[in-house]
Image (cartoon, rainbow, N blue to C red; front, side):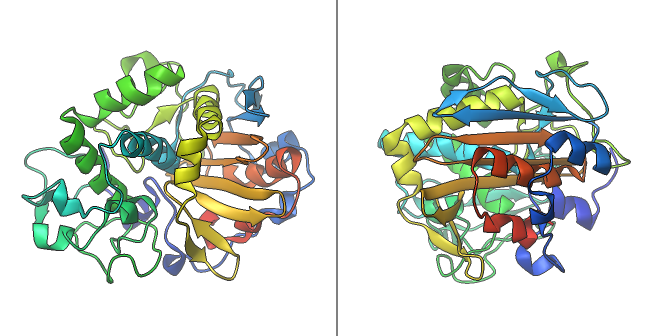
Length: 350
């Protein structure tokens, strides 16, 4: 495996935070264009997308030059986060997890932070975040990116500002949430997600770690990107899935009024200029028709996007194996959820 560069650290599981991106990528210029035409013009190898109409999953569509099948497996990148949030919020509704509790309540001995984003194993460089620091960080702040923790760090982990004070996107926060969930359930994270989320929702082709069954079905990063293979579960980035499987997650989410309401219950400002907020697991746009939830995913060689309206239960998920694949999200959004979508001006998608 090639050593991680700083670019890999920023892109594994998420785009860089707004402070680390030089300019916004205004994807609105692709609106109104056929998705297949955009894919062809940008040289996207494989893209699969699933659409929800009134909560029902429509047949999968595939575009791109590589002739992929509808059930092709992709790296979901940061689309892992709302799937993990779904599991966490189920624990909240079951009374097993308290959003307002400090992380130290669940990890009284502190948190062992592994400094290599692609693996968590004995012998890797690591540091311990003491319980006194975890006492300042609420579980809620891990879900809505207000913990003060960085996106990724290869050094010692600590909040960069007082937790709960403002928004900063954090992959590290979701990996910490993973450890909290393991402490609560007493079960390793990947098997727990398999049993409690993937199996009940019929997500038969989804996993937080690579499976040999994916050989021949999983697409690789296209266009010279250095892809990775996830051997250890990483709650911020390591999901393997299909468009159909992820659409099942979207359908389950918007059909569960309690869970969806909880996700929207305490939004924080993520981008004041674009009027973007963040809830427990999802970004939020406010529209005349009600809130629209969204999340993007950037792993090296993969660009993904999901958007759904809890009001109409219309939405879509887009999975691509191209660094240029994010452009397909804008015309898809106009097709499925017509109207202004300021997220496509966000530097997060750059």
